[in-house]
Amino acid sequence: MSRQFTITLSIGLLVVIIAVIGILYMQRGAHIDLNGQVLKVRTLGMDENSSVAVLDFRITNPADYAFVVRTVTVYLEDAAGNRTEGFTSSDVDAARLFSGYPLLGQKYNATLMMKDKIGPHATEDRMVAARFDVPEAKLEARKRLVVRIEDVDGPVAEISEK
Image (cartoon, one colour):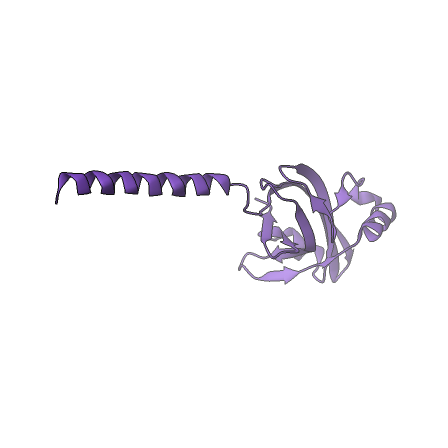
C-alpha cells in the first residue's frame, strides 16, 4: 500500500469514529427509563384470605423527556419466584384505606397513577397500595414486592424492594 492511501484511510477512520462518538454523546438522554428504590413497605391483613401492601418509593427519571405513566402494577414474588399480581388501588381508595385502618400509619406520599408525569431529570417520592388475595402470613413471607411502571410509549421500569 502506498503511504498516501494509508494516511487517507487513517484520517477517514478517525472522522467516522469522532462522528459515532458525537452521535452517541448527543443521544445519551434519549433513553426513557426510571430508576428507583422502595423506601418503606407496610402490610396489613384484611381478613383470613386477603391482605394489603403499601409501598413508599423514590423514583428518578434520568432522561431528557418526561415519563408518562400508563399502568402501575404491584407483584408479590414468593420464595419460589412465582409472581402474584395485586389489585392496585386509586388515590381515593388509598386515602380511605388509611382512614379506615389506622395501623397502617399516615399517608406520606401521593399515589402514582395513570397519566402522572415524571419530569426530565426529576426525582419524586410516591406510593402505591395493592390488595392481594393471600393471607398476611404469605405476604410477610415474601421474597420481595415489585412495582412495575409502564410508560405510554412502551418502556417499562421495575422497582423492587431489596
